[in-house]
Length: 319
Image (cartoon, rainbow, N blue to C red; front, side, top):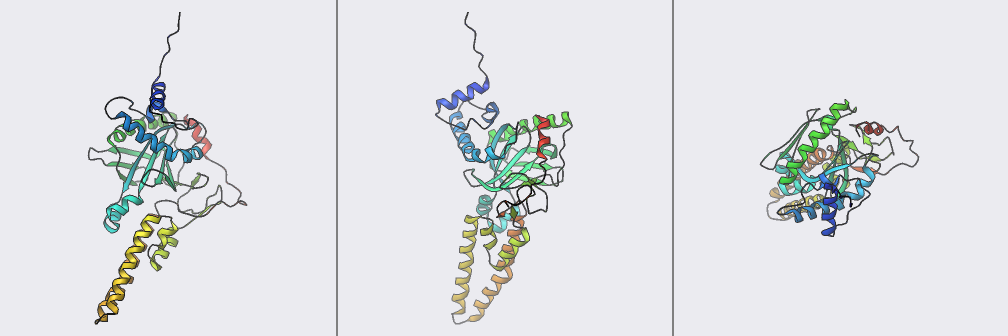
């Protein structure tokens, strides 16, 4: 008698990926049946291809970030929304600057600043599920995240499938944390991660205890933008935003110089004064607000640094 082969949801996903000729890194521990929650129905092919493209972008970083026994449950990309940044910088520039990839694992929520296609851009965060007070999607497309330290984050740009799938995964992970009584100590609910070794760098620290990497402080970056607008953004490697700011700054000076060379120098002096009184401080303020969201690399790991004890081993308790 021939044994009946029992096919799992994982098998269905891997077969579907093979049929679509999509090759993903099999060494990364994905929970395939939740990462690709929908493999049938109208539009499923394009959805699978879209998600696979995102996984290829974040894959190399995930290989370095993931802990032993950590499994990837879901990956999605959205945009962190800030009314002040949208007003002062413009909605498009703010959107470019705040692209964020969510990686939900069985141990924690990882977040990565990214470019438009989802490629990580050196600023990373981690949120333990015990620090999440509320994760709520709205029909308008907005997703709100409220944390135990009273910080609230608003995101847009997630697809309807993402907004439907992620809350269920959060609830399952939070229930597991509560069942085991697991609540890691934190310096803030959304912790910064080192861009090089991916260990936690506590709040208000700008040197990684694990590898010795050094990061810009928000004050250092803001002062540079105060002296010369866009300088701080170049230091943070926000090259697209910095270039746009630099063009705008140069245009302001072209207007001022043309006015100074005209028949009425007073107009030119007024424009020049406005540049120093308004444009420089506003850019410094924006740079400071952006810089304080996460870590911005200044110098890489120090080979002579003695690493601190790794506290992430406790996360294995929840597996």
